[in-house]
Image (cartoon, rainbow, N blue to C red; front, side, top):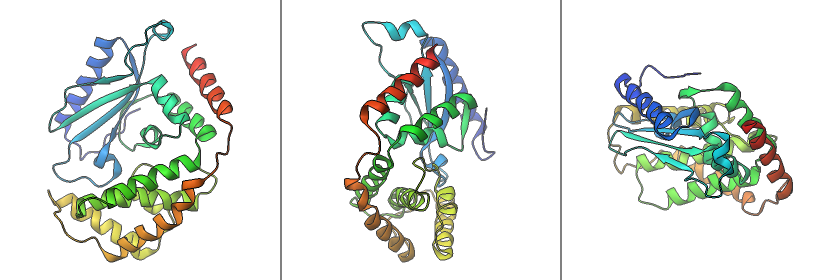
Length: 261
């Protein structure tokens, strides 16, 4: 599986492919899932946005039986253009079991460098069965609060707006716990008012044309949308778990072992 938008720099994509192949060869791992994260996958890139490739890797089965586990992260050199690193399958499964929204988001990226759909669908199925809505909701609530507390700028506002849109998506999809990754889809599936949808898409278009948005003031319409969503999302702060921790760990173990077999 591969999903590369035409707007991505083909030379950069070629280098990412080269790095992924190098990781697989040098570390003797398989990479069943490699995607773009960051602003490009979130749906609001700037002309000078870097590339944030993230991947899940799987070692040969016998290396998971060692008394001295290997490091569960593989990184490649970081520079102004490339940020390419990945997590071991075991780390990814553990984080999903803990309700880590970042690990879940990787499975919903609209930009895929290389991927096995069956692998992705298996992890998504596991997430659907074990992820707590309360954990996901708290994650987005805390991210939005943290970003909102920093120096105000239109650029930073996107990092408030996306988690607020994710909280809206959770609100209107009460039976689901795995939101889409990108802001446009969150807005389109979030049943927001037309004036909010228009303001979001106008702001995205502005960011796509501007290298540095500066310290401008976010539209009042969107500030009000964010405030309302964060206020309603406070219910996640004390949301009780829906599943027993032992059951979650057992389902995560079952998935992990079945894949290694």
